[in-house]
Image (cartoon, rainbow, N blue to C red):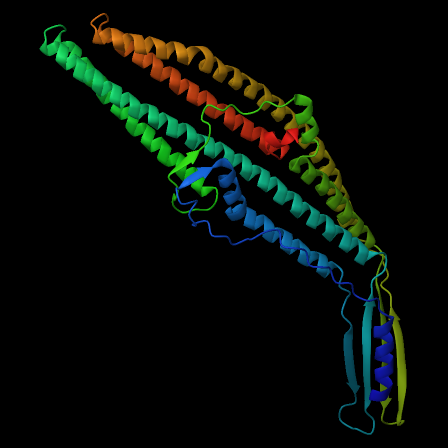
Length: 429
């Protein structure tokens, strides 16, 4: 009987299509970098360095990369054919003389293009995972950019607060000398010391804000503690304001929209999978039966065909088709939402740039000139200390508003980069 089964089994196996294994994809990057490595010998971080570290070590990037690897496994599994089944049965186990032994191999054969439909759906899922990674990278680049300029602005605020403390100490000393000389009232010295204490409070706040901003930046590349001394960049540099048509063109190719388009394709592919399942699969059987009573072997050939009388997978087809329509509507909604957000951010960036330029060209130079004049005039006895305090307060408030406008401008530019999917500087290339 074994001699009969071997050629039959080989015939079934040779008649099956060859399995084409999915080729392994190249790794999308190092998923386990060391975020604790030092930045450089001087402990200085530039924007490019911060972005590079975050793209290499951010945990969310690793999550997206693992999703791509999982999708590669799904592609491989989608191309695998179903396993054969070995069945054996024995009739009349009590007496060998009348025993009948049957051994057969059952091989399910998929019809209706089920395998190709599964592979196509798995391919679209892989494309979606890649689009998710691209969108996550764009999101992280924007987050790093905003965090970087927050640190840069916080450094500048701390520097100004330290300079303000020095100036306040100087004013207190000058006031004390004038009080001792009898030129001003002791009340002015008290005011000077109160003003100095207030500025020291602002210095402590600036130090706290800088520490928090540094922690947020370090967290973008997964560092558990801050290992850099400072960030290096142009604190007065304004973000670029690209042409609107250029931004709108780039938005059409952005990772977020690409992800929505691929989701439509994936849902349509899943719909084809469900429709292919309406066609039943057949099972081909080959084997042999040994009849001890007759003393002979008999070949067995069979075929099993399910009858789709009740279950034609109609519910799953309806669900998959509705999901596909839902993905199409979601694509339209995403396009409208992103276009609206981009238009609002574009207008806000233009407004923030105008505000920051106004501070740079007019407000800050005027406030600085007024403060310098008041300080020198106070030293020579031409102005009262109240004039100095007023000029000082005006300069500090203008500087704080200017730094807030700069931070908001860079944060708005980062949000635009998050939507269009690449840095604004790269759009000109």
